[in-house]
Amino acid sequence: MTETTDDLPPQAGSGEAISVRGVGKTYAAGAGPVRALMPTDLEVEPGEFVVLLGPSGCGKTTLLRMLAGLISPTEGTIEIGGRPLFTGRDATPARDALGSLGFVFQAPNLMPWRKVWRNIALPLEAKGIGRAERKRRATELAELVGLGEFLDHYPKQLSGGMQQRVAIARALIHRPSILLMDEPFGALDAMTRDTMNLLLQKLWQDTGKTVVLVTHSISEAVFLADRVVLLSHRPGRVQDILDVDFQRPRDLTVSAEPEFGDLVSHLRGQLGGQQ
Ligand code: ADP
Ligand code: MG
Image (cartoon, rainbow, N blue to C red; front, side):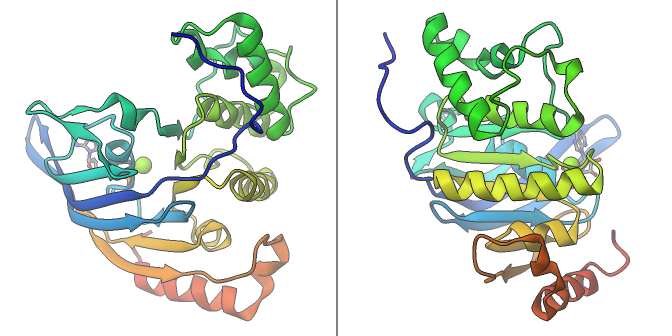
């Protein structure tokens, strides 16, 4: 099987929908079962930017890992672009649905001995794609995340924000239609985080992908989201869903608008002392 070299822009193509119906999770822990997430419904539209917000331990990572096919739900069904994510009696993730998903964790998890472009291209090696094609696609993505001049650098030569850009590029290399991000900027300082939020918004607008991002930062949620899904304290359940209508592209001054402050106050009130 050969992958065609096409003339598409690096990440053209629109996002797919995610459908979550009655999805819950109970972990079988040593001291007895732990209910991490109550049965949850959520419909994410193609190309939508949804932020999952909630206090520590409320099941955000659990839900995102289920969306990524990394762990299976105890109950309920997940569909990616109308296709079931888990199939069969042993609930194994379906390969075609997995191909639609890119995942970014809090830590960039780069391989220190690999140059930037070879970190970005890593997922393509398993697919048997040739070196020239891997480098071409990695270069396109490095440019998309503003690292075009760092292709031959090693991770230790990059700042934390730049390393996370590499992780984002790597998550996009197989052209997923959906990007799942678990507190991707949680380890960065405030200014770098602002820069990354702007970069992510641009990348999302340019590519049309569906994004589901987890954070426990209220202002980050309001800045980025089309919709904020607020999860309650453990065991998590959807406590509130808020539409955020500020015009795109948003710049950092949006946080000075009264409506921004109102949304932040509302969410802070809902969270109470939970954070
Ligand atoms: P969040 O990302 O919102 O902080 P998590 O999804 O990581 O929350 O965890 C939700 C709850 O499930 C927590 O109480 C956590 O301790 C528990 N939990 C997470 N992973 C496991 C696991 N593998 N085994 C048992 N309990 C777990
Ligand atoms: Mg988490």
